[in-house]
Amino acid sequence: MRFLCSCLIYFIIELPFLFANTNSLKYSSDIILNDIQNELSYFRINCDEKYTKITQTNNNSVLTIRVSSRRNNYEEVIMISLGSIGRYLNRLRLQITNNKIPFLLPSIVTIDCITPVGRDNTILSCSVNNKILIQFSQNEITSVNLWKTIKPSIQSSMNFTIPDRTPEIFMADIDFENMISTRIALEGKNNPRLSKVISTALKASWVPGLESQLEDMLVSHLKSNHSNLMNKVMKKELNDEQMLRIGRQFFIHIQKPYKEIKQSHTSDSLKYVWKGNAYPIELDQYYTEYRKKHGL
Picture (cartoon, one colour):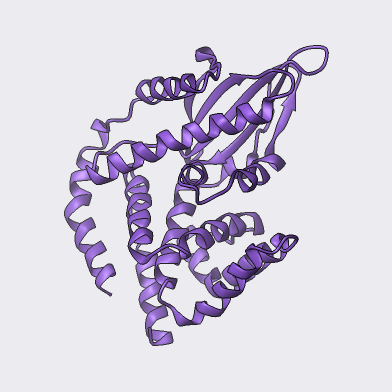
């Protein structure tokens, strides 16, 4: 309840200021692009400025970086690029959150890697949630798991045109999903009803071959316990892919101390509000009723 009250007081005080300054947001794609190009240069990654940009698609801002590799090291170039971008975004996130600076971080990062494979050069493209890259930079996600995450989404083309990159992630509101996942983790951190689920999931995560079972368990848990929340807040029924994205983030956050989860949720909420949205009152209503129902 203390967290709920503090959130309400914060947003009552801060929202008028934030919306009044929407037009003066210190969002500069030039600054981000220049900084990221500098980051990549530290690792001697060749970045094509002409095709490096930030665009808006549906509910997401997308950072696209075009890099180049040799014939046999494209995996290394992609991973180093993602890691350096994640490190930069994490520093920027901490700076803007601590100083309450309205500065919009890209929601999705896309890497287009040009590699001399085949008769002509081939472009390999993958897209990923910026939060996953930040977690990778903080060693919360291993390089193996990051590669497993992006590998299914990698597309290739011989003519430098990537049609329908990753429609699922581009159509979703990634910032909204991130905010939902941290709020679920925040509310569930001290919930004894979740202790058995989390304990089982933690054990399964370390057992080779149980990853698919763990993912099924996360989706099943969200469906059985949070379907009403998802429908109320997102105004639609979520598919398994969306549930899995939220479930993966929930699983990462629930293992952290309460203070860190709260900081992440504050950061996600500010990012969502700075886009011109209002914090969903349905979230507070749902958890007020949930705590009463279960005596929490």
